[in-house]
Length: 98
Image (cartoon, rainbow, N blue to C red; front, side):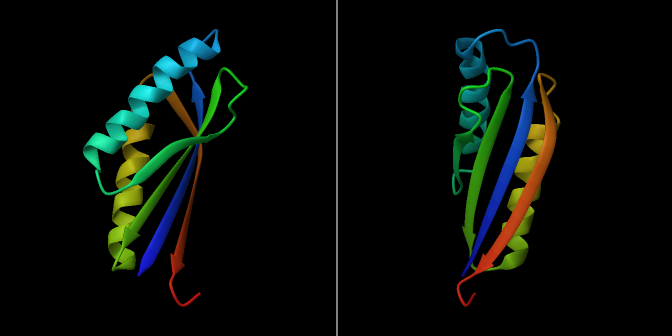
């Protein structure tokens, strides 16, 4: 069993309040859940900053290749959104024997 963890640090576009931030981050998280129903996704950091957000994604799979594939697809989906700038993406892969 493999667990993949993806952490995305994103910069939001023209956001002036935490309410506007939520109106950008919530649909992003909903779209990730809709497209990849087997992942767990949540806003995991930068809660008090209005133009920054950290989104965490977890993937559980029998193969390392599938974990990597799903994490890459999630990263691409976020990177190609016009209202978001992806600052960094960290991928980690854990095996049940680690």
